[in-house]
Image (tube, rainbow, N blue to C red; front, side):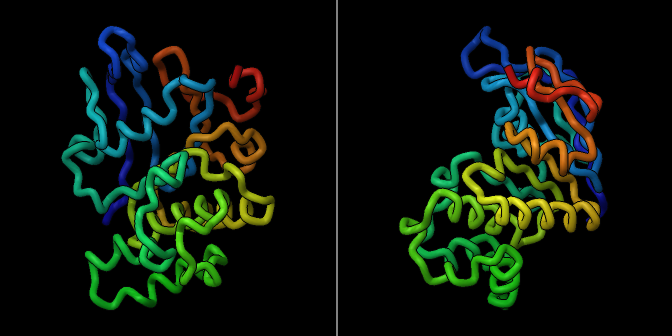
Length: 224
């Protein structure tokens, strides 16, 4: 599949009528880059990821992927890892979780499952019950589970939460590898150190807008 840019065009969105989270938001996320969203709690970062994935639809405006609207795109184009892995993981074992999406796409999927587990260094967890995992382990499994089928657009919400420095390094290295494969990677985070290290492009999500910002700005001031 070709490299897919994401265009946000005059997007207005609310959960409760009149209480707009986005008010005419415009921006563009380029493929082959790690696009990082920062901003205060409640600013709309998670909502923006959901809009891009097509899981929710704006009341006004559109999000375009290629020449199609996001909610019209085949689901396998997206890989979405939620902020809380418990909202995402539902299979009994780690192996079942990693195999869930790819077994629908190909018959011989075991090699893919083992490969992604090895990349995230979670091979020893494959036979464990998901309920037995720590939050950090669940976080890694949730990210691995959405990458196993090789999506073109990767949306990650707080991917480094509760991860040790070593596990954060694994996530960073994987994202850099995916960037080299011309994936479109969009990450929402409050982890300033991670954002500064990994971002090719930074976006501030606040006050109903999405603004590209200079990487040299003091990010701590933007999160208040």
